[in-house]
Length: 268
Ligand code: DGL
Image (tube, rainbow, N blue to C red; front, side, top):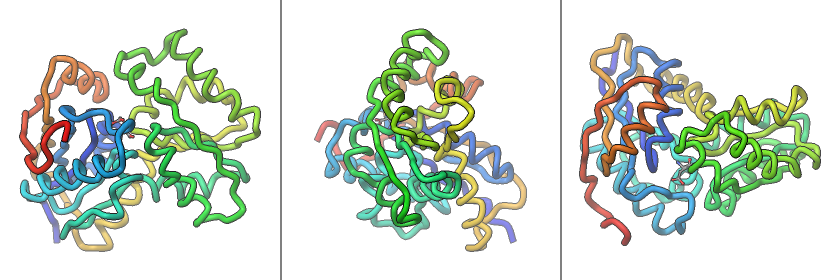
């Protein structure tokens, strides 16, 4: 049996293309329907109530478009909104998968990097401690990383100085694992690996969730056997900047459909 319906992937913007890429690499037979809520980005600085409302509207939109399951690629939305989400579909966020991989790899002390909202929620900390009560977790908001990545400054002295300032205290405190708890951070992995050195494992929630989704689709009889369609990318605001960033994240040009998800008015 093969279920050819697409998997919905939702993010606050185009950063979640890191998760879409990880899904495409792990599940080449699946078709993806991506939604980036670029009109209301960023989520990482917003309150839980607002992120919940936006997330519900985005998941409802993907459901109306006929997806078979939803992956909430946005770490902030996964951290703040997953618990209260109403959907008839299977919905997976990135927190559990990222935390499971970090808990499996850590020797005892995990540093979690994320947006202000993700860190404030302590969703990763709670998930990590649930999995391994002995783990020490230190979380740090890195709000400058998202704009630096979106600027394309991945290997740049300014980004290196910012990263050094953020992660040095964590490294000095003895973390042995850094959990990259934001859609954009996998693009900084080479730089962070260089700063952290060989003794520190880098865990990326994007790769971890792709592995989890592969297992869940099989288990629920929802997997596709051959790729039946082409991946499709929707955004709620399609500026030239968004197109450029999407191109850089995917390393190829991409057509973006401008959509109105309805539900929660912008800025409300
Ligand atoms: N996608 C968000 C996350 O993973 C980062 C960008 C934002 O703040 O909306 O947390």
